[in-house]
Length: 204
Image (cartoon, rainbow, N blue to C red; front, side, top):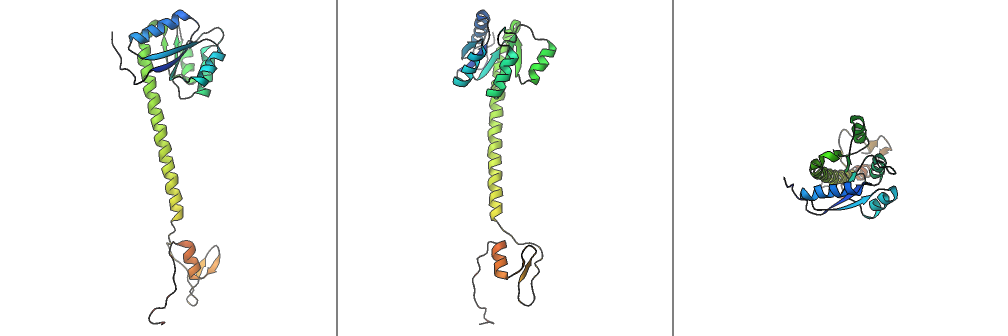
């Protein structure tokens, strides 16, 4: 039997399943595949919400046709409460239309119960993709923060470009917003220059 690459930590699995025997079979298959995990089984909405709130899982596995809490309801709650946690349907049967709908609603993957040998790879793939999304989100946040810092820095940098209308007599500069202003006032507003008053040799 192929042994899959182990994760660095014990995986927290939240399993929505009303049949205890199926839950034990799923756990057995995952242990045989070499996964290190802790699995909590629930079959009611209240227990599902409690686990999400108090022990957030790394991955959610869910049957589709539970009598009191169906898989789509669990998926809707998961997407609202823990949108970044992978959600995988593990069910006895899933028609094409239902499978398409599950992906449209945000499911990560689905595995049939008669093909549980595909479950461990599906979990590992989903967790890798989730880690990649988290890393990308972090990098994008860092990039956005850097852009904001650069924009704030640019606001502090004032430069003078283009033609400046200057009075040939009094040397005032025409500001299209504030009219004619003394050269010293205009330069202080539109540049970072610090002006000092001195006399050139000719004026002296």
